Image (cartoon, rainbow, N blue to C red; front, side):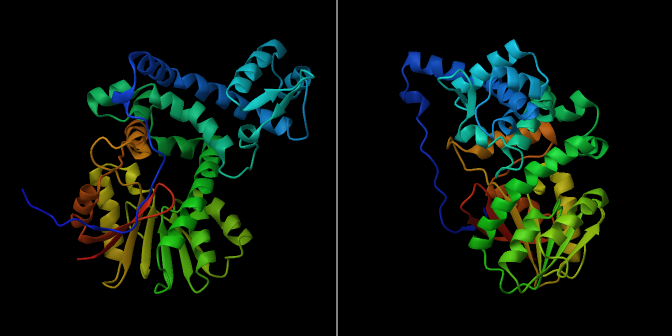
Length: 358
């Protein structure tokens, strides 16, 4: 077995401490596990509230259940039961007059609110929920559950369903903007003139980086239909004069002449073979002085609690991809004629995996 030196990992990222399961009494363990197994109840309850737009209805103030039912075109007694459940979760509350009003949690479900949690709740309750129903098949066979349950890949499904793609893009744009701010704060981009965002979606990540680095130009690269939706957003961000949007397929090639190539939450979507294809295409486009930045979660070793370990199962179910440990990223990069230089944690649960040409 070849021994590799450990990559340089700069800084630390701390999170809330988790109670150790071995410290629980039998009764506490039973209650905790029951709550975990009932988790889909809350997923679907919150999804229905998001889909119906209940939070938007309550923005102007408390409303009766009859008014809410009329506004959402629902069955009033059943909606009342749903609202009671939502109130028990703290998403909404019933006041002393018997009317429902919003809470800080509920305000997160308003259309266009920071974090795009309304969009994410809809994804969790529809496409993602359906795919997770096939998890056992994925574990038994290694096949991607979404493909088997829906009959096509997740990205093919999005391309064929405009409404689902719009919800997905809304959710991704909001989460990536926050990640981009963290990346801009953690990494020195001052030496790079042209940023190429490979698989950059509707441009939220690249726009944030360019706003933080006014000296730089950007190239947004994604599928042609995605790029078409990105151009108005680039213009509205005031970046039309220094950001080009280019359509294409990163399995075929990527734009050349970039100083830094960025793949934010791209490689985790794919298995090793397709990941290496993407990385090799980036390497062919890079000069010897260019840098490649993967913005990904890095799986911690051992039994350490980590959201990335749950995301890893999400990728198994959704796209056949995976979250990876540092060594696995090192191996992927080496197979693509790249070398892992360092891993820089950020203030969000994503790290900057910097690679250089070999």
